[in-house]
Length: 567
Image (cartoon, rainbow, N blue to C red; front, side, top):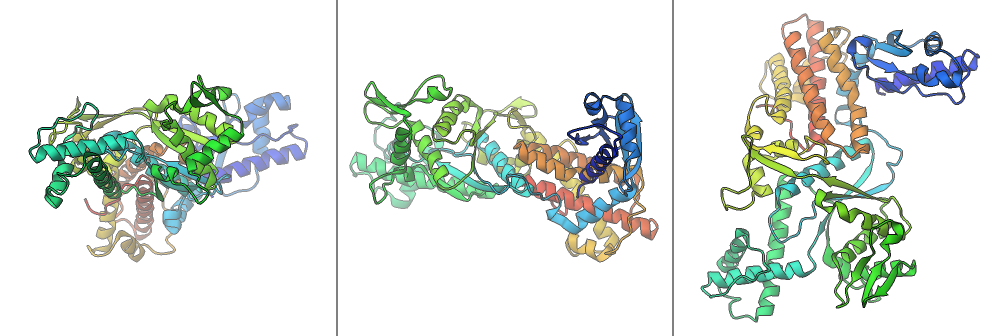
């Protein structure tokens, strides 16, 4: 159990005891609600319960605080407690309770901080990236890949049931435009004098796809009917782009439980109904569809939208919103209790109509949208807009190839999703303390090096070496230096960091946590010798270093970043 939780139980028990014997007149009982003091000199934890209770208890806050202190039960957590200012209760912890964190961490390993949340049994559908299969992924997609994957990892560690999904936008006119673009490039490469249409995909990758078709099949499509050729190339190009997306994301460490094809929404079942038909039928049965101007509309204004939305145009063509509506209804039918979508910030205006459709189906508040801001790509502080290879926009794949997966992930996650990320390629490639991911990984690798030195062996993993050289019943009472205590305090914060990061969909907080933990380890390593100290001190400090290693690796794993043992 986290120290904070133990301490809250103790303080809450004191409050209850004071109320029970009549020393305090409080109903209901206020919670302890501990927080870190701004100044570490004021202790490890502080409570404002006395000040919050003054009005209800009709008593002076300092008098209430003294009453709480007088009723504190015997415990092994609090070393000292004092009243400060207008009624703050400041607590200092025993060294022993902090040392227990080291033992817990080494025993629990990757399960340290694993939690159970109140709504953990609810099935959550997390949908993210969902790039059109008509071109390479851009850098923004890379941010959503890092964000969605890490969010899922953190939420699962906190106890949520998360199902990850990629929505493939493979239906609609953009697919035909894509097929036609490849067809024109194909004919051009074969020497035909044809012009690219005004509506087309003009990137160099389209030429590459067309050249690939020629390399594999030559002129097989040259004399084909134009419409048939467009369809054929549409499917060839679509499959290639989808495969490229899968391969890139797999390389990036991002996988999905399902790649959901938009086309599936239009497949009719045995009753001749598609998912789109059924979603429209339910909306119509609820009375939220109407006909006007030969089109079918959704009454989204009844749920706060600024205007009603067209679902079926006068010419019978379905709008993009219709597919999105059917897709979200399909998620409901599959039994999900909460839907989380990660969108780019440019989709902000789309949120209200989607919230309206959920409310129309009787599921208000079920949809949660996380908006992500843009990535500003820099090189030595200067904006980068063009690819060196193609002269076009730098793609997500090019960035990963130049910088690497770990640096890309860590820097993409370094800021809250509602803030832009300034991604400097040259900083990401540096192997020094100015590169945050290198700084954290180096701390992990340094600990592994310490374990090898202590074991006088270059063979074996860090886990194996730690088990070999650190006694199973290692005594930790020698860990009393302030650098050691500070490191253990930070370790104890981890479970709450994970809980809050999962609750707030904010994995970026773990990048900061990892840097702070690495910094505290470096301070400890500077201030406290490990190898060569008295045996009990060396063993205790090796155990502390090993616990730090485990926690650094765990934190990095929740970010999807590796923890190398050698650098």
